[in-house]
Image (cartoon, rainbow, N blue to C red; front, side):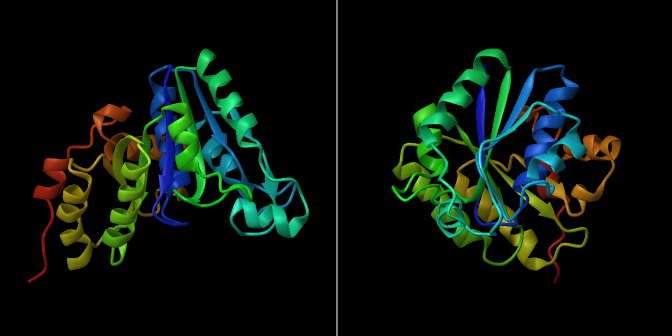
Length: 240
């Protein structure tokens, strides 16, 4: 069994698309995979959420959403504003551990970044990962601002004893500029390892077959893909 937590350096960096890519490749390998979204915010009951995107893109239907709040806020703030109870992180950890007993891979997609609060006591996805002894895959932006956000996230993980599974660029532009190209080497320096992948921008708009191909090309062999960080770096062309 294996548990992998997916977080990001910020909201909107591509966590759901990367989670769907991981699920799609696991499904291709014939592995039993479950996807858990601890708390969905910014979606009312009956509205599509992140897990609907995972299902559409990957074909994996064993998904679990443990709490939902209509306001687009952190889970703790969204629960407070709506008057709904906060997510029970004890129940969350127990559910993930239960799923891990019967699934080869359990993917847990957090909300926002690593230290976003899930309750008023300060529970975070970092704390969950540490409790589960699960590595964390960090999804990052390609452009300006990503280096500071990534450094802060990785430093926070190290300080909490959370293992890094890798760094993936959630949306690599079709026409990268000097910032994006320069950031690749710096991201690898921050992570002290090669990139674990880079998914193309617009991947979330592909149909399932095309998405599976993009996932295979965009994720490293450790996650079931064929992404070669050395070849990716060699193909970069820094503008003069």
